[in-house]
Image (cartoon, rainbow, N blue to C red):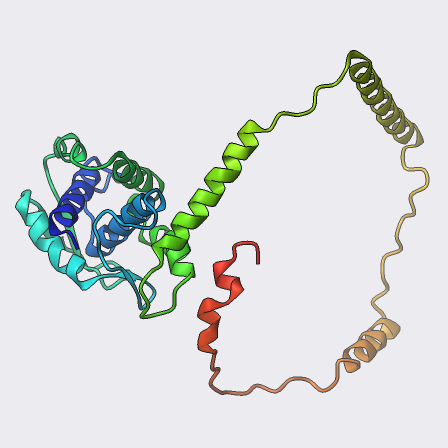
Length: 268
């Protein structure tokens, strides 16, 4: 882990937060926000650098998200180094009661010049999207590629994110280079005529429907809720067999679920 880069990134996150975000222009961020924003910055950098993160943090899957003890230990010293203030709150559903803030909003430009543009864009873009909304931020982080390809306790595979980014980049470049076949004047004329014919056909069908109005539609007969109806419903229910009984037990899920296609493949 590059401590200098880690401290710089933490301080930049604090300075961006100082701009004020959300409906109440909240300028304070908790440790949980800082860790997740550092992770998103590392992810954005790694995707464009073959899986190598900016900070060199050995991220691992801990509890439900990305974690590193070394990063956690650097938060307070890094914030204090730029005159950060810490306050404690009690109204939070998460085990994260301290909020760090800094009064000097001009630090953003000064610190941002020392960071790669990819990291700067990632932090600012993430703040615009999530601000200090912990729930949405966590939901996004948990669904990122490294998290979906790892199990609890494992190191997060940023190289997979880089591979997928390169594949998407390649497909985009191929799409840009694609040139549709040129049509001759005769083919263009034929195509235009086909479009006109189709348009006229559709318009004719719409006109016919308007003329016919409700003709051809059958008005449904409302059901009769009489004795016969209830007996029929009772018979249908009997086809399902005996009613389920309430039971208590313990459900065990196989650890293989962490590496299942349902987590790693977005189309599944």
